[in-house]
Every structure is written in C-alpha cells, then in structure tokens.
Length: 168
Length: 118
Image 1 (cartoon, each protein chain N blue to C red):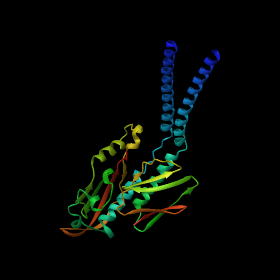
Image 2: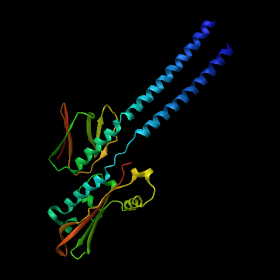
Image 3: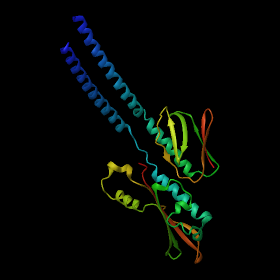
C-alpha cells in the first residue's frame, strides 16, 4: 500500500514535469509564429505630411500669418491649432522675411527627436530597430505668406519641419 | 490483477494524451490568428482610417463596408482620440491615434459603417 502511494506520487511528479515541458514547447511554437508573421506598417511620414498641412492652414489661413494672434503660443503652436494627441510630434515653423532674415520661430514638442532622426539618417547600421525611426516631413520649398506683426505687414516665407515619433 | 494494472496504465496514457492535445490546441489556435494575418489587416484598416480622419475637413463621411473581399469588418470604434477596428472575429485591438481637432462620430447600418467628421 505504501509502495503504491509512493509510486503514485512519483507518477504525479513525472506528469507535472511532462506538462511543463510540453507547455514550454507550445510557447516556443507560438512565439516563433508570432515573431515570424508580425509585420509593422509605417505611416508616420504620411502623418507628418498631413500634420504640416494642418499647421500651415491653421497659422496662415488664406495666406495671411498674423503673429499678433499667435502671441503666447510660440512654443505650443499645436495647442493654438487645437491639435490633439501631440505627444508624438515635434513641429518647427520658421518665418523669414523678404531679406531672408528670420522673423520668428514657432515650435511644439521635443526637439531631441531631430537628433534621433539624424542618427537614423547617418549610415549607422540600425536595421534591427528600423521601426523606431521617426517619420519626417519637410517641404522642398517654403510657403509664401503675408506676415503681420508689430513691425507691420510684409511678405515672408514659412518653412516647416514635422517629426512623428513611434507609437510604442 | 494484471488486467487492472494494464487498464490503469492505459488510463494514464489517455490522460496524458488528452492534456497534451488540449495544450497544443490552445496554442495552435492562437497561432492561426497570426498566420491568417488578421492582425496585419487590422493594422492596415486602423492606420488608413486614422490618416483619413486627420486629413478630412468637417462634413466628410467615410464609409467602410462590413463585407470586403479581404475580410469582414466587425466593428469600428473611436475612443479617447484613437480609432479601433475589429476584423474577422479579432477581440483585441491596439488602435491608432488621430490628431484632428474636429469631432468624430460613428454610425452603422446592416452593411456599412459610417465615420462622420464634424
């Protein structure tokens, strides 16, 4: 009787061990299939392009950029434009006058994202973490606008950089 | 006595086989979701909708058919600035954020889902 009890206990321990081993094997199979079949779709460059258009339309409706109205929002331009979920974005708007002199800068977000972008643009081997590269949009040419500020009214050019960070 | 012992052994083997079968059934069932690429299709739909919502002007209505040649769309939700799409019976969705300043509302009928930007 005692012998069969010990045997039963040993059998239970063996069974538990076998179940653990089978569970580990099943997890490995599932893990490999999850990694192999996962695919990341990157739309951040498109997001950056759309955001730049929304910002330009917001700050210069019908081509008139009134810096007096934007006063106080120079570092939170996306709040001025009532854009939501801005945590992933960095926006930099530069306004230059006819002479090429910089007349103003409007920003929002963490400028450190530009360093991350520069790192990915360099020839460093970052293929294994490619999905963390930020999306970026910078138009080839600036937008011609009429600028109104305390100095008066004059023609200017608006350049914009938009960076979109990953969503992980 | 011998028959009883053999029966016990057979019983134990059967229990083992059933347990192993159950475990593998659960994990293969989970793997089938990945192999079918439902997650990829869900990701595509969510990101497409987010980009369309971001670029839409007020008064725009986006229409999504529930039955598509690439799979069925069960439902679409917008919550806390993100759009969630559930396709082919998938119960979980990570969603994707949109940034439009306009309001987004969802209605549906039997065959289509309508996303209205106002």
